[in-house]
Length: 172
Image 1 (cartoon, rainbow, N blue to C red):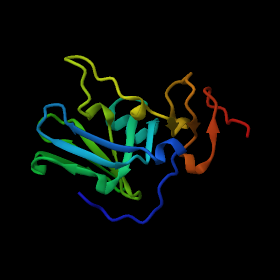
Image 2: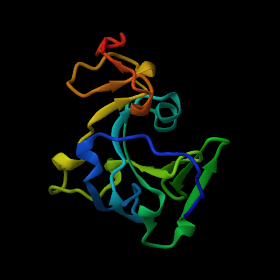
Image 3: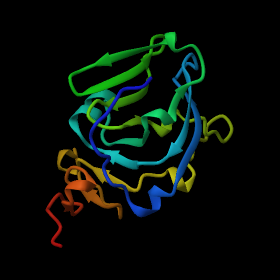
Image 4: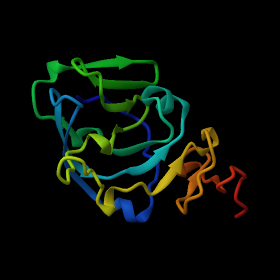
């Protein structure tokens, strides 16, 4: 898939800009498979209402990569897209699991690390350090306070507003 874009990326933290993602993934039933190869733009827990409602959980762990870093590795006829005026969600036609989302105003595609083929036996799926979330975004929409050490951005890092665990704005 490829959608033209005109807006700038959200700046990521310095440790992410040098990181490249090289992962394969699949939907829940394995009918839709994909590969992600390219620079990591953002690796975050997202608390926005769109993500929370789309995935029925909050926060959602998202990894953003340039749009051309995502490719299907099988017949893309097995997936289906749902488009709104702001975002595209791609899911498997068979099992319904979301494969990616693409904000139409941004030059990146978002994938969920839970769909990466990172396996440790029958039950393990521990992410390597470099794929663990590095921030919270849209923290103003959180459903509860998160007492972790990750930076919490009211919206996105580019807006520059950082919040405390309790949602109050951090004094700079």
